[in-house]
Image 1 (cartoon, rainbow, N blue to C red):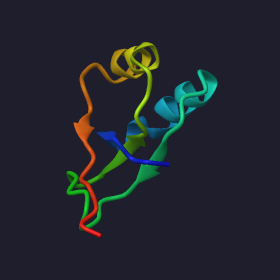
Image 2: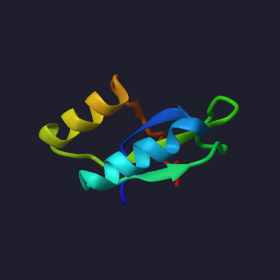
Image 3: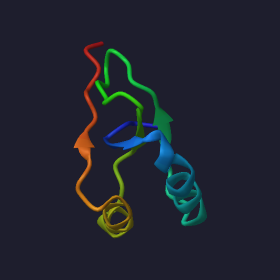
Length: 75
């Protein structure tokens, strides 16, 4: 999956968000803080590929904001 954007969320929100995204069949991965993603303590990232604007609208509504651009590899 080509990673395009992400949302940082607290651990306590993972279950609800994961179940909702799976129910509406939106592709994502969950990542923990790393050298590439600097996240707040106790947070994880829901990472998404590029998607059609109609699908993105659902993600935007679920998270309540626009996602952050996923850092590109320097490879």
